[in-house]
Length: 302
Image (cartoon, rainbow, N blue to C red; front, side, top):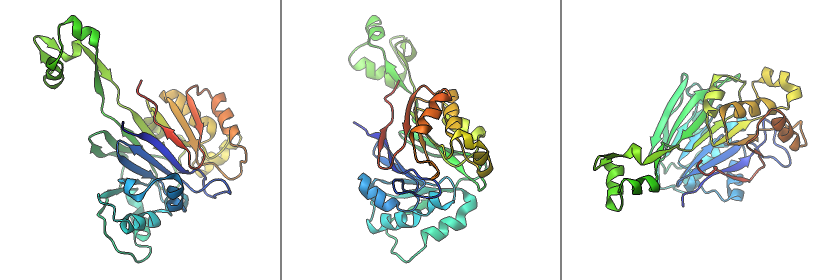
């Protein structure tokens, strides 16, 4: 069975704490691994979480503040040290090319792996179309250029046995119907229904903006920053961040099934307050206040 789950490597914002490492998140999806925002210490957190360099296929950076990108140097060198047998692709804001280059070549090492650079620019858009997902990006609102990422599985179809039997379709004809769209005057639409593909979004440092809502829309799993509590909304706006209540209201309006709050300011010692404020804001779905090294499965299909 294919694994689809989020591995949380770190959950701190600008300053790590005794219990929270800088950012880092790996989405495992049908044999591929997408690493989002590797901050300092990501290599060590990967080791502790049981994630290997060989598991990584894409590196996705939202923006070039240190807590979201300083771990790139070590991760890229580790990919080469371990001679990862497949190509790896890096996505990041094109405006930060100089930062990516500095991190990629921060020290001397031997390059053994093909690392493709596919930066994001403008409003964002589709970045990749793999067999089991499409990856796209949307521009966010932060003091430096920042993008969120969204992974969408193509819709499929669910065959309905009762309707197949009613129309006398069985055996090899079911496969023919799926391939050809019609058999003996019976169309695929008559005996099946759409099975929505799963959706995942990753939204880091940003104020409320159109991109946040576009990324969150209809997600099965939304990972979103909630740097501040609601009483500090003024600070959130000033520094380009969200509060717990804002993140939860976005999720509620977007129909998110499982909300993961993360990227917490070191000023707050009690993580349960984030959950209370998210619930008070009206989010009724599954809710997780992220902890370092936890694993969060993508919800099963509806």
